[in-house]
Length: 81
Image 1 (cartoon, rainbow, N blue to C red):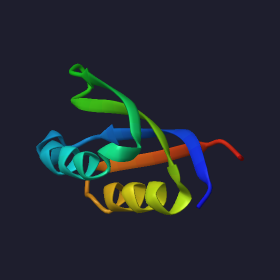
Image 2 (image 1 turned 120 degrees about the vertical axis):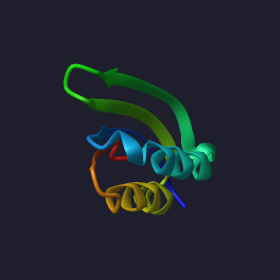
Image 3 (image 1 turned 30 degrees about the horizontal axis):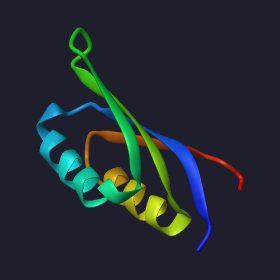
Image 4 (image 1 turned 135 degrees about the vertical axis):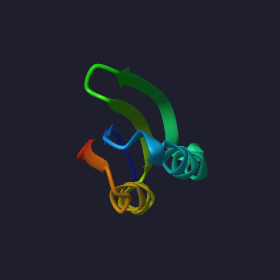
């Protein structure tokens, strides 16, 4: 299957859900090239940026699981090829 490279942006509005976010990211560690997390304490949120390299199916499965969590917003930008 064709691989894509991209970035996944995650906004965590409910810090209590962070362990579930980390568990999902751990499950997909094989497609994660890099990760940067910034806690925005003044606003009570965290922002996570993840560089991924994997198939569309795998990336979509990961973002789908993340998107189902309450208090989480997820957006993805991927290469066309």
